[in-house]
Image (cartoon, rainbow, N blue to C red; front, top):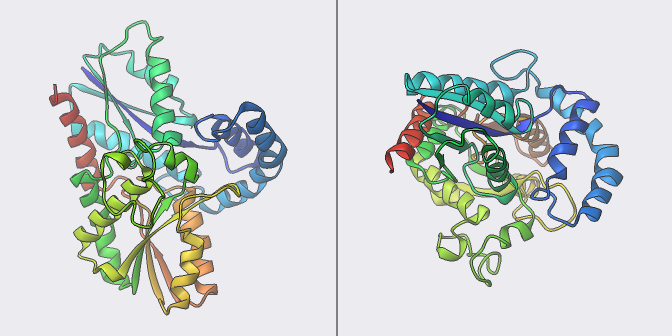
Amino acid sequence: MNGLLLVNLGTPDAPTTPAVRRYLREFLWDRRVLDMNPIGRAALLYGIILPFRPRKSAAAYRKIWGKGVEAGVSPLLAWTQRLAEATQASLGEGWKVSFGMRYGRPNLATALAELQQHPLKELVVLPLYPQYASSSTGSTLQKVIELVKDLPVVPPLKIIRDFYDDPGFVASVAAVARPGLETFKPDHVLFSFHGLPERQVSATQLGSGHCLASTTCCDRLVPANHACYRAQSFATARLVAAELGLDSERWSVSFQSRLTKIPWIKPYTDVVLEELAQKGVKRLAVLTPSFVADCLETLEEIGIRAEEDFKAAGGDALFAVPCVNVHPRWVESVSALVRNAIQSD
């Protein structure tokens, strides 16, 4: 039997201040997320973030809690569980699928223990992050390897990483977006990706002098930026836009969710929203293809706050396109990625 471990980033157990505080403490203590020395990380986390942010974030979570496939549950958790179930059905006999969260529950140790109840010929690990980032993909793979090396029986390991340009993923994003775009008829389509500090992007380049050195550094992928999150995000946007048949002047890219005052990759989504409205865009559709499951960042940050901001700036309507979640085309694509990983021997 082969095993598949699906990994998503994580979610609080409940939309309450204590639960969000526990989640943020685990998430932000990761040195790959807050990439600074331990003293600075502790000062920022315990002196600034944890005393204030959990209450605000809990209020945001309450607005979207249960807006998935199961009432009273985090949408991210519900969609990830459903994806695991659908992928299990798609792969069929000979496979055992489990899922875990990098932070929060069910954790990766629990998921691996479930898989270890079966004699595994190979274990495939699929972090559900389309574009590579040290703070998501890197952190997840580091944790998986730490846990796997301590198992009584260490299975042969296959890792699927950054599927930003996978034809199945691209087709899945387009398949979810197309019906809504045809009905909504937007003036403009914005691809909003989760943001990262600029220093984390620069750290992934080979050599120096490429990443963020010019306004065109992400126009194409070259050896220097092959693992650059920003470059991979632009590549995803180009591929999905082509799949949807969007004219080049009708779509653009931005980055959301910046956390601290240090420079994050640009352009910023909140700034772009205002600029588009001021340019006369009245109907705006927003895709969020750095996420495969609807979550706080897609449902509340884009679906509620971004819509309010866009209208306040002069726009008429904003359509937040759902993530791929458990769309049949996405389930098929996940299964194909997994089978190809096994067959690549």
